[in-house]
Image (cartoon, rainbow, N blue to C red; front, side, top):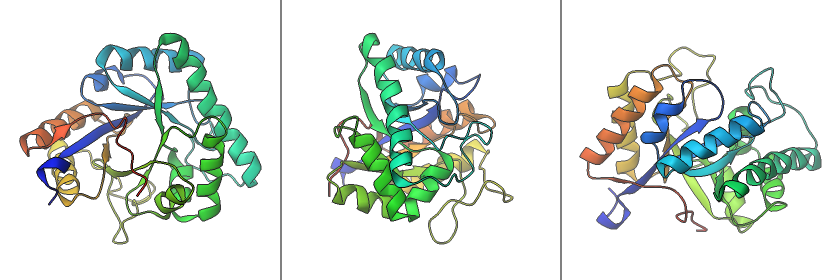
Length: 245
């Protein structure tokens, strides 16, 4: 059980990916904005940044493999330099959109297959860090709690944040159940809230995700936030809370 000083957790959502996301901004504390790899363009990024700004939500880049057809959920084999370039381009795109609006990008969370692949592949984790670092080394890198990616990113000098998922089922080894398998999504708000509370109470994550494209996402996010607060957790933005150790 975390100490009273540690009873703070971020609630994030992956956004900028499609319609119907606006209600989430009043519930979350950090937004991971699609920046061109699997979804998104300058217009959708600008709208997401403005919504986040309006609700006091921290923003981060959500880069992926260049896979719009597969929504970034298909592994794409790229050499490390090319993958780093792809990631850098996406992160820089969000920075370029957010800057003129007076909003600072605080973190980077890879999307989909890239997120899962980097969690277990050292070379891919290095490629992610290299791409981000070529833009700025001041951003927090967000990865699956307990994953190898977090270790690699710490070794490279980045602040990191461990992530848990309210709306995804876990395999026994701590990885996420593939979306192609039955039961991979948790769509019951009460069940999602219970999982979020458990993860927060175990102290295994700095931030908890609710996906914007999960059916009933606003109701799930509302139940998760209410559940965390009723359990005594302060729900606050990830910005500034990444760890190097």
